[in-house]
Image 1 (cartoon, rainbow, N blue to C red):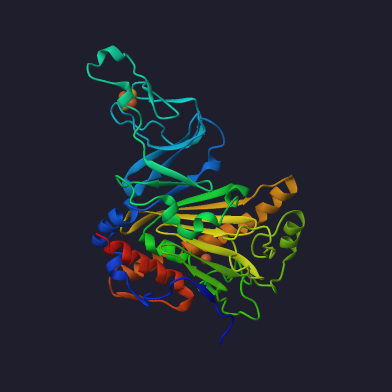
Image 2: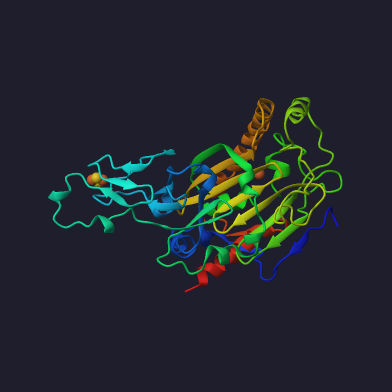
Length: 397
Ligand code: FES
Ligand SMILES: [Fe+2]
């Protein structure tokens, strides 16, 4: 045994050790994937905490379905999702960004919609011979909220509820997500297939190499030099694993100053898991750093004690992906904590850039078709599960 042995829970049968990547990154495969994986799946598009009051809204561009979404908290406090398109001649109601408004007026001819999506006013209404305002509200997208995460489903009639889609994870994150505030986000369009993005964030095998300069000793340590995952758990579609912190991590003077004024985030970790819900550090590993959770198909969340990171991968085409990386941290109580968070944010940004930097390089290596198969280890079990779930989803009628 060369280091820590991974404890496992779930169905580990029939996980592929080789994946036909040439097929999976092809345009033909993606055309079917868009319908079977993305249109039928529950897709996370943000958090209710981004809509702090009645009338709060944000625009979410969804390149996978070439649509723009308007996400709104109504005057009744309910969060709804609409296609961001005017019922008159289709103009985008809100061009971009976020804010708070009692209603939305289309800039083209002035039609007004309420924050519940109803058409309230038509300019010079009597000149229209055949309109019924009650039928011309904004077009709704099926949406549900789980623990502050807002999910949409683009199927005509969703084949299952969000609760069923989430499986056992549904009850395991009570009050976790609302403890954090979004402190930064990066959006980048990469010339690579979306699977390469998801895959890059769901294994720790790369960390010794890719992050050797920015986060040299943040995981593993003397007793676990290859940084084996202490815990791996597979669900019907999703999975999560825990990353091992390094108890021997050398704290630099600048990091010590940041820790003195705030909480440990990364590369030093707060190992105390007592107040976390059962879904976070589920095995209660004593030198725990954070978990990596994949919500199939395209959302990866790193759930930590005082932080989380979220990576959304939205395919634009078979060879292009919009990546949204968000950093969420504990709510700072004073200026010292805010400054302390700044230190960790800048370190985290460099680490993420290193991750993002691998994806186009992989695509270049794979897109010629010279390499048809990729081979995966036990420490890349999450990727093996991802591709098993993908095959199962694609095989459904
Ligand atoms: S397109 Fe919106 S009012 Fe005409
Ligand atoms: Fe990484």
